Length: 159
Image (tube, rainbow, N blue to C red; front, side, top):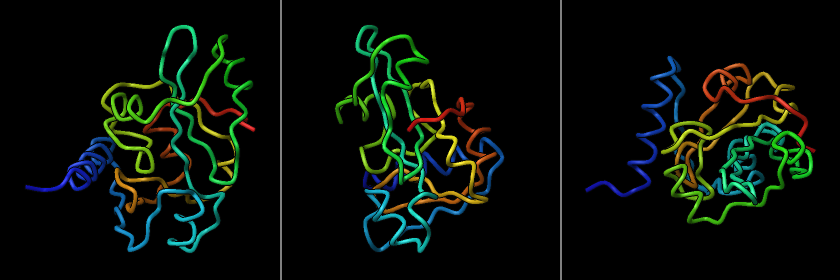
């Protein structure tokens, strides 16, 4: 029986294909759990790493996905202004429930539930960016345009 990370990676590959993308998923020897780890493993800039961060609104408990550049820290007040309510970081159990993936391997697509998504405008500065592919040691490369296409995310300043 395959382990859960294999199943998660296959789920991401299937989601990519359903959007017409033929992205190659790379299985890295080292962990890619943090943006810096991923950049070191891939030999790219940390700014090119897509951090998939799940927040939850405080009043309505709605999960929100923020796709941030690996170098950036998300200013939750900016997200609050778009949503008209405060947000907080989602607990790992809620991340798993809403996305189907564990923290450190959450991809920008293929989630269990659709999530309202915000994309860090800084990710649009690079011709290629890298995102988690379902586990803490898998990544795939895509363009910022493809990221917008597969997530239907709203591009904003998150810092």
